[in-house]
Length: 163
Image (cartoon, rainbow, N blue to C red):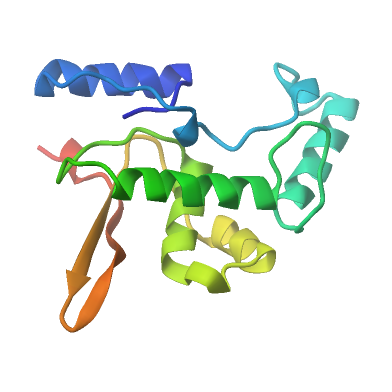
């Protein structure tokens, strides 16, 4: 499974060439969706920078929307939908190629569950780094005397680059 965004599709295709599994594209795994008015504009552009800053606030403020950009409520709802979609899959293991901010949203939702709020998500974004090509492993399973739920096994591992 892969985000429909180009760099994620390229990564998914490279993985598919080794695993011989087809790439399934899904909008569920795209990066957080920014306002269209700032697409392709440099951060130094005064107007784009102002919209970007407001949009960043919307990711840490419930109900606050900037243009057509994804806000806190939108990105958390999409994370919930993505986790539900993955949980319902028949496969026991699969690869999902996504993006740093969205991966952090998924992990924050898993770790904080219903206690996740806009302040804790912003703090999570500020303190957890996700670098390109890192491998994060999530399992949906039971644990000793605990019901099945999503569990974080590894975060942004880059050991696959070691030789």
